[in-house]
Length: 580
Image 1 (cartoon, rainbow, N blue to C red):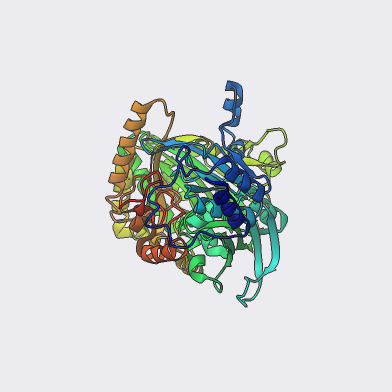
Image 2 (image 1 turned 60 degrees about the vertical axis):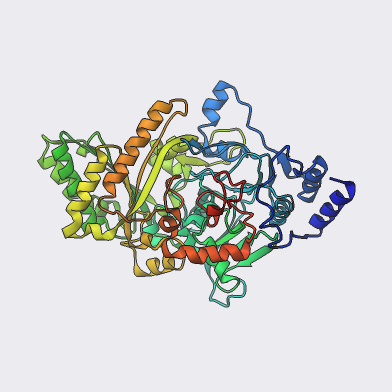
């Protein structure tokens, strides 16, 4: 590029000039890559670095020896701190984790706006990364410019908050930078202020990605989704403008980021969420029962489904039940609003059933109920005293004191996915005339692979106000009528491709068997199949046309493209080439 052209671009960026909306949509059919004539020059990259206060840098993979790799690559906090890494390492025949060419480690919305304008002017592939947990690989892309929000991690607790221009009565809330992870949000809100904010179950999930994907967490049946709790957001749109949006200001864009997908409508830099009264206690139930025959196993599943429908299908209970080919029913559920004694009483019918058939069942003596003061639920010291085996600790030099992740999430760190499928399970299956159909499908699916019911990821059984609040978000309404999200997935070493493909076949067979009970069920954006067909309907149902219209309004040139994102049907799988 000639000096005059470079100076013009630099001055335009410095002045906050944005590429004219709609000008390049028809002409720019391919994003530029390194080596292309239009790839920004070193001087242009240097200008962006100056504009962002030195926070632009090339992205590379960390150099680690074998011992370091074993320790650090299994630590989700370390992975999250490396712009060249992602929580998942890839997906069979879909994507592999590859670093972006450059990243802006944003410390303000202004940094984000500068990066967005630069990508727009220079026709770059732009990606947004916060926690980096995207199973679909949307957190990075080779040859791209990354907006990395990790350092936007401020947490501010409000005793009373009113959205700008809304005129509504103030409510308790918390404002979270887009790079904040949920552990730090819980620590400030629950441990510090004695309240609850609805967030993710995994401690290292980023707040912005979870909210924009819908936002189910461990206690969603009690407190709703994170998206439904959103009061206000700061977002940088494709024109480089910093906008504060809520119900009163740009309500369509506000609605779209409540479940319409991250990295699609702009870069969210700050979110303010309503907080809730904190229960006295949180607790967990752990149980693993194994049947000695397939016939006995089906009876066990039927007994559990009946127990769930009668006593667990309510706001007190969340998390998971797993059924697999080894004829084992594994329960890992949490509760709130009740005490340990009441929780034990709820489960007694199932343990009594197993004890009565002791020749057919084993493991019921493993039944365990844990109870903690709710303020201690994300406190590392309290967890180590109560149940040390459930946590893993960030032991790096300089790590924030008290940082931990759940042992149950360990296998997800740098996982290479063979397959990952999910489906909303309609609550109508819990009605007595339909329970056999549910049990038969669950049992048949478990002959192929482990099938997990995530009861907190489905709002049926919640209070009416919780369901109505979620109805004012962009998520597929199927979630409102679902008692659970069924997840069937497999991960393992990338090198063993034969096993990966065999496991993928088993996962697919299991989901086919399960869908006999719910053939038309949609699914959850944050946890879905990369190869999902008719994904627009499956992920958003009747909400997709409205989302597409909002996308055209705020991002007409489709600067923001992610896999399974609104408008991505117009682009190649790698997000670089506009389709005819």
